[in-house]
Image (tube, rainbow, N blue to C red; front, side):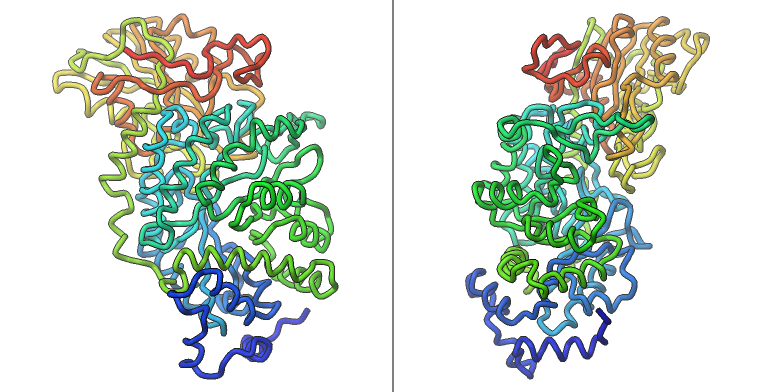
Length: 610
């Protein structure tokens, strides 16, 4: 299909839709009247839209791959997104607002003036934006068992996202992680659906009274059973759980993986993202039974289904088949980051050939428009810059610090905790003691995250230094040798994982690195020691556990490392409970509560107090 000029396309659209010729008359269109019911506005707007307009609404492009600015109005994108780390040159609230408003102004040049909806993965705070509050990842929030706290985190995240002009968040992930080796385990609230179901309170926080200032559209993801995939080791050197196949019965799918989606739908979640993974060999992006019959039919989901990053391209090697099967299966909007012209033209062609019925297109577009009207985008399409001061505010950082405190799980304590603030000499060691990037994990500034001081905040070491008395001496040696570990009253060894995200985070072995293992050995052999594990999942520690006087699971606490020190030094007691079983060895993995012969190192729900 040859691309028409923008002027030709606009003229064609005017003729096809019967749109009125004067600005004054167009402002009288029922769909532009905020006093009318949303259903009436959707019906009126849909009646004015050409097929090209509708296909545009079903297209989501990635900002970094938009070839020309006028493509935004030419294709009339329904949505634009930022992938992980896809940011404007000025990565500040003003920089984001300027960029998004630029796209919105271009979008509104199209005849029907349907605003674009910008989306982003703000999965533990507004994690792409420098200076945002970075909350603990979901696995830590699951340990809190505190849905009211998580609702407040949803509210805070929504305000920070809204401040940058973004109105759609690809969160929360309500996956049930059933195998610790999976690289997305930390995006899960836990291994049992009870926690993920209760934590759908975050949707109430994000969406609030949708359309009011400071609210954003939430997304429950990834539908469904993405955390139940089986290990693929059929090829030498290929070790993968991500985007795999959940080879489970429908009974197990409904019992384990479906409950949080039911809860999310009851809370009115506006969108649901399909999973890259398969169910018994059939890709979710083309699974009509799950996306349409179950999700939209049986569960009554009224929002719209968004595909994952180029997810429909995994159905087959035939682009036309992929578009046809995905849309007919129930995908409403397609995240097409790499080749939006191909998707747009293919969808047009498939409808024109009769391979996709207009009823399916109208259903998809109606669902998308409904959420845009609910968000108030037609009345307020541009950034509300009065919210700039919400990003990284002290109130939000205090909330994150509380979340860190409540997420900590005490696994062992031989009368060494709480630590006395006036302890004379403290040695802090380990790879994650003074690395705010490591303690924040993946999806922080970039997709896979990174080590080092990549965001503002407080490392765990800095939190310790701020907490001890003025007479105490705190030294930090990352991996001390035996001589460096002499002469101290107490050691705090902070060990664990480096950042990763899906795909790259799949691991065959969850044993600590050699440097961290030596740090535990050398410090705990020389003095009383507290070991703090900063990780997105349990680590294998069984052999070294007897050497430790105390063991704490801190998960991935984010920007407010002070919260760890608050509890270690007794300002607050431990309250967290394990949201995931802690195995004795890799031979036990995967291990989940309810398994036959369940005999872990620490059971699901375990957690001590002082």
